[in-house]
Length: 207
Image (cartoon, rainbow, N blue to C red; front, side, top):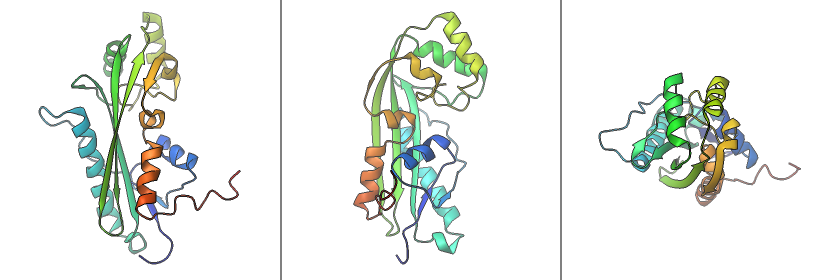
């Protein structure tokens, strides 16, 4: 690899971009990908998250290959899956979907799985899966209706974003907060650092 190491994020998610910025990292380019996120028959939540993260990384690598300056870039991808037991909740696109998710999560615990996949300039593939347990308080009808009216649930796994209004529903979280948001920072930075990416190059003078 020659020149300055480049980092490509296989996502257009503002949340993942903000998390990387929190760690002092700014991707050189965003390569949001379009992959089929439909679970396979009998696929477990953790397996789905890992498969989709790898698929997004591979798709981004194919896109990056068309640009010479990105030929030796690090490619980072992630996917978050929310599940109750083995039941995988959708990324809510419609009001009824979101309502079903929130009613199901009300008063009970669920799991959030975020898989991270890193493709390196040397051709190696690193993956990590982070599992977190989240418990919602029991929600009243008015709380649910008001939340659904906010529209915040759109395109969110399980119909909610912990960093938004639904954060007020969380009674307990065991695991990684940043993972539930969409990108586990500890694991992501550890992977990049372990593969030789200069993760702290932007720290000086950032205060």
